[in-house]
Length: 553
Image (cartoon, rainbow, N blue to C red; front, side):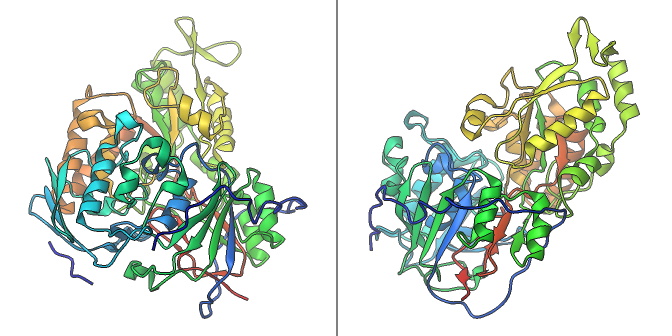
């Protein structure tokens, strides 16, 4: 299969910031209601201007492999770096730094043909050798240096080689149909080989991390802000963005402001142009005031609970199934969210190519849940909590700090499950502590609240078991031959026609076994923008792209 071909940046210092006093006198915005709409006026693009983006947090490290998939840091990486392919909000793949590619019949070998003239911001070429260095680090990481592999990069990767300056051959030990789409994943960012060869400590200094994107680092202050300025010689954006040459904006500042109401107030008062993750219930109010509100869905997993099947009480499939049907998802949607959110139909988003509707398995049925718990031997006590063999039917939920609504959802779920005899505790952590304490297969973590973007459904198989170094979300290992076999069928298919039936069966089986308990489809990345901000685009993982944006007068 063939797709037709269609100067060193200044070193950043820890400077004082232009937005240092940005929020000193803000007042909290009043009013909120359900709903939300997306609007943007037209007009000719205008050069220049400085855009301030207020964000919840910036994570604990800037090591590219370890931070590029963060819901927060991914915004910055998306402007400092390029990718080999571009994936839009509908999952369509188009050329970028790879202007074309070939695939053999069994999808075990791919040949990438690179665009000529692309360079990193230090002036070195984005050539075949550079791409090989990036592919190797995405696939393998470097554990000894503290550099992680990219979690959803194909585990079947064998290696790659430069055939000439602009041609890369990539080999896999099994069919890997999702390889090309995964090159558009937000973790698959192109970094200069000099950076990749440096120590983890050096890479953790954002000033040392050299990309080929439309912006470079002007300054950054750890845990506070990152200031980017446009790269004047940039001229290789994907054709899908319909913009050539440098960015319109002069600078792009990401400023940390933890409180959502303060972020939205700053946009309302004109002291910032974008607030990330406003409350969903505020979207309609701000839309009615003339602000642009956006809640793009991304390609990936829905929001829900990955269940640790080795931890009581969820080592019993009947208890997992009771949890599955005991949650009232419609109440979650009507109480916490707005019309921009959709009910889950599977454990993957309905806009993912190959997703199928299994919503019948997710219908709320309190009577069925109670019957399952009765059958499993859990007896209701005088305080309403069920017990078995002297143990209470208890577990802890840890709200996902990457989702602003997570704690409100978990509190509602806890109320719903209390009516069935569950005793649900809620323990909330900040981003850093959550990452340290809440992990898959941790014996103290019975449920892991997760949503994750991905580009191609073939990567789903890499999280379900521990086959081929998979992430093993449910702590099943390979003890369930049906799950292992279905995951393998999805991972090794050579065409979408072959893969789609296996993917449909896999979705049904995971829900039937209640390995994953979906809550809602996710619009994780919410944006409140000044009406002056024009030309924003959103990619397949719902990141806003300000390379195409400009500020209207």
